[in-house]
Image (cartoon, rainbow, N blue to C red):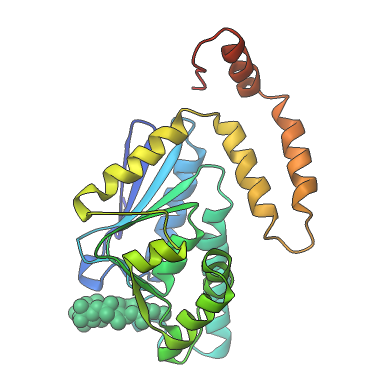
Length: 257
Ligand code: COA
């Protein structure tokens, strides 16, 4: 059904694999559209509690936006490319109600690192290399990279990565806070699933409220503390809250699904 991605679901986890290995999984327009559709479907599926995003092959997560596709673009087309991408994929992922774990299995460059950064949690394999090389092409990151990188690693390191267009290795990414864990490539999906397993024990309604509340801190003109108060209050009206508190009082494990 898709030309550029693979989708499989197991044990409440949807794994979406970007599958253009001969192009190092570069994001062309069609891949972005397919990712949007697959993410929308997984997010709307009540049997899915976590989404894992990864790349096919052992070399690359995603080596960026597809340079071959945009090399001839005009100013207007360039702006449209960034706007469409942010709306349909990058901001879209960040605001999903289902948590997304990026399993970074190799190069995460440009749009690839931006894809990892808009995911809620990042795990990398030890061979992963990350960077925002856009200025080496005469352009800047356009899928949220100039904003999200500084949130994760601080402005000084973000400036260095963007201005030098250099790549960092997985250990530096771990030390800088760009990824949460680094594991051997053969253990990458297992590590992402281990984190997913811990998430899946908890209330999906509360997790989606937490995503909205945490994201509010990064939205202009929005007071995150006010959003937290509102989301906190709304939790009290959910079946999950009833189940979670009842289970605690009955000294049993909560069963949210
Ligand atoms: N867009 C389009 N095609 C890409 C791509 C991208 N971002 N990244 C890699 N590819 C393609 C290559 O053009 C090549 O295709 P071809 O066989 O049809 O020529 C194929 O993927 C393999 O890449 P190649 O460059 O031969 O692999 P390598 O191991 O020598 O180098 C990289 C790997 C990641 C260092 C190199 O591919 C690269 O620098 N890619 C671009 C990274 C980038 O600037 N991303 C930001 C884009 S905004």
